[in-house]
Length: 210
Image (cartoon, rainbow, N blue to C red):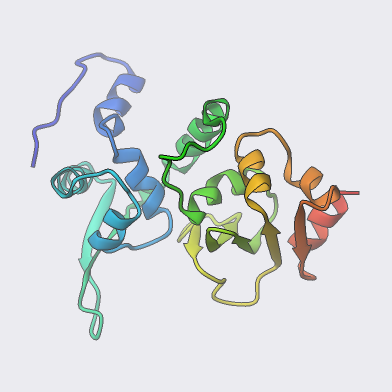
């Protein structure tokens, strides 16, 4: 476990950066917002991180009370990492950081990795209420838990139960929403995003698009 480096400043922002300011730490939090993840799953969804750095960051996050490691019961019997309540409180930090960084996205570069669930946090910023929204993109499917106060914020693949709304977006549309160039209601109104379902979230999206 690497020794903690510190800015040695009596400032809450500096203290926070002492804990989460290392490269990859906040992106690991982003992945763990989906719930418990195995080390191999984390490594697969963090392209560019070395195994040594990932292992080191996870140990640091355990030490700092951001994440915990536990063994799944049989027949899984694998070790998973999950956020603690303190780690989950970084969600609004990531949301604010993502909103601030919208202007930095620009057009997707040929070297840019992409995962469908990376759109989960930008999408949550555009949704209000409570319920599950299932999302289908060209790069894959995922679902988000709108208004969830604990537990996973999103998950890969189809929703575990009948969702309150289903969304289908093409690549250009979800990239534009991620960049803040268009709002979700506008995309629905223009026919660039398809909403189906009879839940309150689906009805709200259709109403907002009028």
